[in-house]
Image (cartoon, rainbow, N blue to C red; front, top):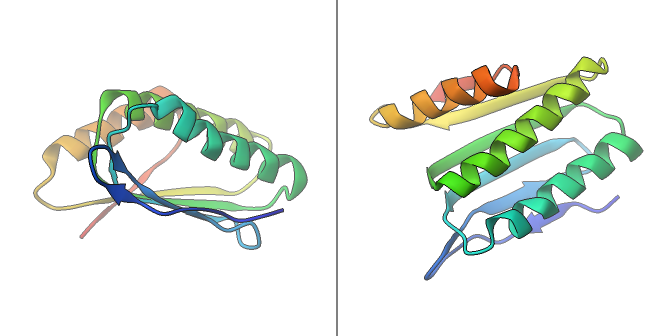
Length: 127
């Protein structure tokens, strides 16, 4: 299975950097997410995660370091969190860490909403 690496971009639209490692199950989404075709972008991440869950069946650690994301990104992330919760319920280890700047109160509220709507524990790491 191949790693998934997407270089972030902050031109007209803001594309996060993605690094999903197939050998370790360590996955990272970093930057800002404001895309024209959000569903298409995140469909690549969902597909990779589904393939990993089916083929590798290993632990997953997802680190999210988004400083900005729009509503359509939020919907896509919720889908990912629900999928990870389902994987966790199948007795797999899943860890999600969301890195939050101390001054970003809105992000803390968003993460709490993700927890409530997905049932997945998301660790909030202040930096």
